[in-house]
Length: 254
Image 1: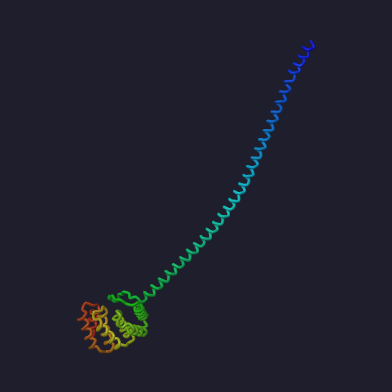
Image 2: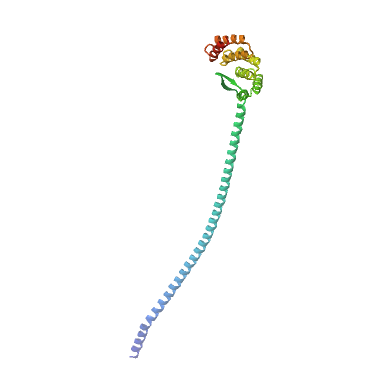
């Protein structure tokens, strides 16, 4: 009986002890799980810390690179502005050089033009004349038209001396004779009018020159010579206005 009770007690004790062991086993696993979890968390924390450190370093490197790039951009902008300024300066200098070359070329052309013959038409006659020749003739004629006949005589005389072969010569002789007539140098005027007729008998001024000779002869009281001159005018240039005037004067002289 006692043995039976002892066995029962032992069995009961054994049954009573089984939940306690099972409880101990679960706590160990939980602790290990917690430790493992803590270890993984720590590893992840370390990994994140390392990633953050690398990211921070990379970000700093990137910032430095961006700053360097910005500095390079600013340097390039400054260089571009400098080059543009040089280009503008160079363009202005080139434009100035081109302008000076153009002015020099124009100046040379103008100077050459002063010596190049030009085509002129005087009293219906076209011929080639040097610019200086044209200028001096125009100046002499300008003096005559101002009424300064003494100065005009000198100007036309000088012109004929300087340009003896000039196409202006017949016209210059005509105006020289008229200047002499105006200053009552009738004999000198007759000489130049006759020279005109001798050198250019077909000149448009020739009929007027013959009429002027007759006028000078009338002023010299040589009416006989004047009548012969007027007769010659009517015969030589019958269709001219001077011939019509000659007929009227002949009527008064006879």
